[in-house]
Length: 189
Image 1 (tube, rainbow, N blue to C red):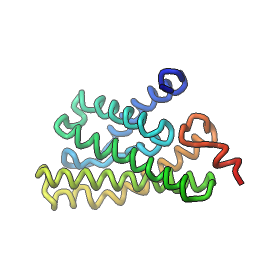
Image 2: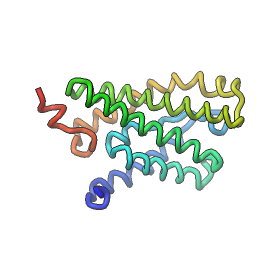
Image 3: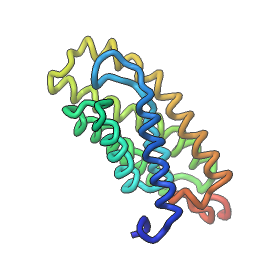
C-alpha cells in the first residue's frame, strides 16, 4: 500500500485531516444536520485518490463527532452524503474527463477541480437533505428555508476554493497530486 511506503504521503494525509476538520467546524446554519460549510472533498480526492480521501474525511468527521461538534445520530448519514458521495462524484468526473475530453491542464482544472467541486457539493447536499426529509428529521419547508435555498450559494465558493487549491498544488507541488499525470496533461500534443 502506497500510504505505508511513502512518508510524504503520510505527512500530507495527517496534515489534511485536522485541516479538513477545522474547515468543517466553520459552518453556518440554524438546525442540526442543515448546516452549510465547505467540503473540500474534491481537493482531497484529487490529491490522495478517492480511497484515501474517504478515509481522511471519515476520520475528520469522527474527530468532530467525538467532542460533540457533529451529531452522533447523523454521523452515518453525514459520512455517506458529505464524504463518500462527493469523493465518488469527483472520481466519476475525473474518469469521464480523462476518457472523453482533450488532454489539457485547463480542462483538468476547470472541469475536474472547479466544476467537480460544485457538482460534488450539490450532489452530496441534495442527497443529505432528501435523506433527512425521508427520515422525518426535518420538514420539507424547514429544509427549503434553511438549506435548499443556501445550497446554490455555497456551490460556487466551493468550486472556487477547490479550483484555487488545485491550481496552487499543480503550480508548486504537482508531484503531490496523485490523480495528476504531468505526461498526460503537459507533454501530450
